[in-house]
Image (cartoon, rainbow, N blue to C red; front, side, top):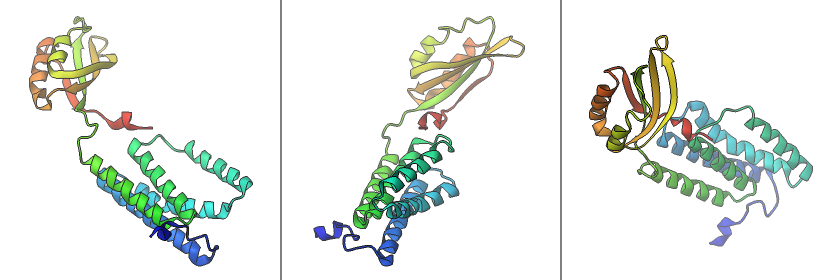
Length: 222
């Protein structure tokens, strides 16, 4: 039973072994790509990259084949990629690390371990993504107030009534300085009470513009 977890490269390296490792890496990438597509929005280019990346990593590591000098050169080349890419979402970075690990395991010949690892981790991510694990009712609140209103502490009682937490993140003037626009990050106690929350805010800000929207995922980036 334990023999299936041994490296297929222990008996030597051949073109058939290379193709087997490459196929395993591609299959791991395909599983990770399908998992990523199921857990949220992802571009077609990113999904294709998840399939190709472990195959590239597998081939590079096989070509290094224990050479320290070549390994250092490859590490330097891969490090340049990080500085030519924008910061991604945490789940996207996790998917990239997943397929790279699968590619490394495939390059070492542990194709069964690579496949098992990819399937198990993908299953864990799928389960957690469909649960309320770590989920918060986070929203952005934008309030327009007149310049005559002392907005510091003006809404504290309403925040205590309708939110679990709030934080003022941005303040700016508009309309030739006659209005202030306040931006808050808030966590609502009950999202269904947002209309009542807005009605009470309108009584404080002179019935000027108020906007509540879901918080963007910028904080989910690495």
